[in-house]
Amino acid sequence: MTEMVHGTLPIRAGEPVLPRWWRTIDKWSMGAVLALFSIGLLLALAASVPLAARNNLPSFHYVQRQLGFGLAGILAMVGVSMLDPRQIRRLGTVLFLVALIGLMLLPFFGTNYGKGAVRWFSLGIGSVQPSEFLKPGFVIVSAWLIAAAQDIGGPPGRAWSFGLLVIVTSLLVLQPDFGQTALVLFGWGVVYFVSGAPMKLLMVVGSLIAAGATVAYNSSDHFAGRINGFLAAEIDPRTQIGYATTAIQNGGFFGTGVGEGQVKWQLPDAHTDFIIAVAAEEYGLVLVSVIILLYGTILVRSLLRLMRERDPFARLGGAGLVCIFTVQAMVNMGVAVRLLPTKGMTLPFVSYGGSSVVAAGLTVGALLALTRIRPQGELGDHLLRRGR
Image 1 (tube, rainbow, N blue to C red):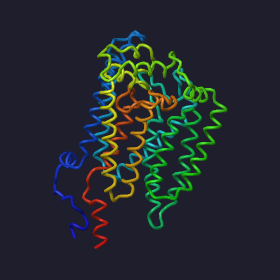
Image 2: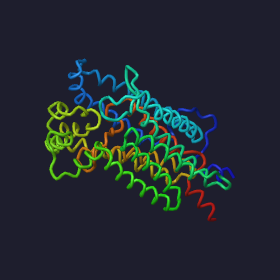
Image 3: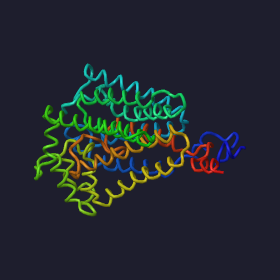
Image 4: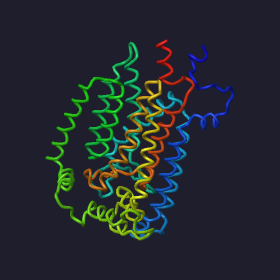
């Protein structure tokens, strides 16, 4: 009976929290995150020095700030990873509600920092971007609602989650922030798809996205300009994409050498949106391949663990979280090599930014919590017993 209830993982009575956490956590994924953060600090030493010089600040001002942001993000990741699925649901709900209220207040109290979109709250010593925290919260809430809909007599979770999706994407489009809108839509689509729901609603959402993109192209000069620049046959070397492309080409396989790159002096966002161009120019394809491998490790390890998960919420929430995390990385790198239009999206744990790093820590922390080995047993064990 004990084996039927608890599966193959033995229960160790009275085991302290930390040893139990370390025994059940995905150490490969955590190691990949720590490696990404270390690479981010290495790149910050190069990319943020020109920014500090332009702002008449000490050379390593932004490096020190990034170290502080990173430590906060790592602590958040470790703390959240110790929670159980029920606590993750509660944390995600609170995070979602707070971020949603923040989005609603942005038009009245937010600032655009000269970038054409009101996305931040200025706090004097720094800024907060609510949409960064909205993504993991929304995925967790959507997974909770859709998982609850699978219970007999459960709520209409799919319809409720779709209603929240409409509200969230409407607020993001009003900023406008089409990049984060696309990530939120993708995260919800993953949760909906993994739940085994019919494809009709996904087709409806896809049609709405296409219609919305058409409207945005015809009504927003900013959006149209980015699409036209992406589709142009030739790249203007004086644009952000032009500088980034040149830097990546100059980097070659091994790079130009530490501190020898020029793109960090040419791009105002070299430390954030185009940090991969700095990596490619100074350290070459070698470091870029390592970065891609680290994100791939987190994706594959997490999905393999989630495939064996019995809890529907953990399975759905984990899939949504790991997909928005890794797809954001793919979008950032895709923009730098001109595979995608410019999105203004950071590279998780590598780019500079307080909101980005802390939100990434919360995202991966929730993912690690949902992929921990628990006494419930794995899905394969459960199905095998049912077949006997």
